[in-house]
Length: 361
Image (cartoon, rainbow, N blue to C red; front, side, top):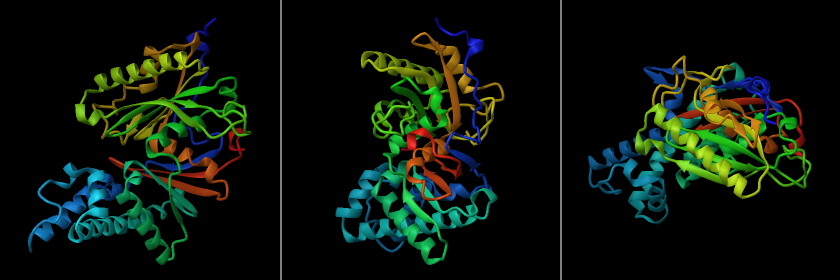
């Protein structure tokens, strides 16, 4: 028999005390003139830097990258030009990478002055830019800059695929006891350009699985990707499509004979309140997600109250936190660590390890 709504598991959205870590800081919004310092080092900022380099080159000759704006070239095309283009094109791109790396290093220097970022030992970098050749080179150059400046911080790329890290990290939002007896879990990663919804396979066969079973790492069984920035939907249209994605994945889990937990973990940009509202930082999302009356978890619970006859519980946290949590297995040799996600914005969070949870092995 399905549990009544009032008997649902009660959770605190955006909790600072998670099973494996304490969230020391998230969604730092440090003013920089009319904007925020993080806006200097997001994906759009790199493209603006590349356009600036090209504009300066046009003052003395031809643009080696042609006539298309950098945003229209795309990261893959820019990467190919970097590797196989003429030396002038490669040189222009490398100049922009250097400028971006210097800027990112400056942002990190500013972040580590904040209380929640002091004594950080390692920073994992994720987001869309990290998955490109440009991002990898910029990250490597930034790491060298910080070391040469005497800042003892390891800068490493997030281990999981950038498209999957935010989904995988949501498994670490839940207490292990809530996952026992289930083989899979629903996860959502909401970004300023894309929404990803997926089914996570929980480990079996190795001590360290969220389900209490033994197995390998958490993996993405199935995923849907919607580039909402191309459609420019309203908030309600976005919510309707998200619900449709979740329902399709529930059907997929049933078809694949998965024992799906009645839980939905979500990573979303912004400063999340314990009641599930977004206080600030959701400006890149379609529509007004910062309205006091809008609570995404409540709307999803209304649309999807049950899974396999069990009342659903939804847990919402900041998207940078979710991406960072995917790195928990790789951060056990340090005490304090952080994450930066370079995408439409620059997401950030910092952590202190609390205890080894069951799925760390």
